[in-house]
Length: 83
Image (cartoon, rainbow, N blue to C red):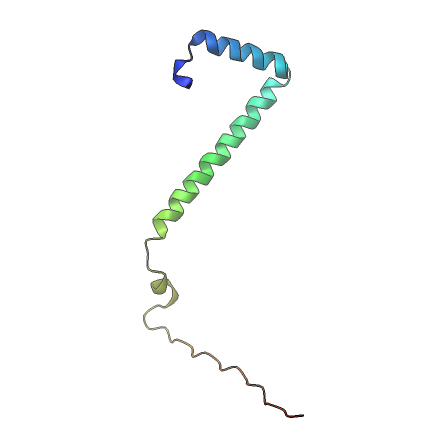
């Protein structure tokens, strides 16, 4: 759909945007679009980095060789009462 856009189409779209938003608001609009793209790129990069670290064994991170493992503490039980 967007592959059929020519130079004249882009000029018309730019003119419509200029009419809708006005010249004074265009720098602010461009700045907010740039910030949004920067945030989006950093989030995508973070997700890619997180996917690479998921390949490690999570059990290996919990225990290290030579580290004593603590036994779980048993929970107290309630004594049954009769009425």
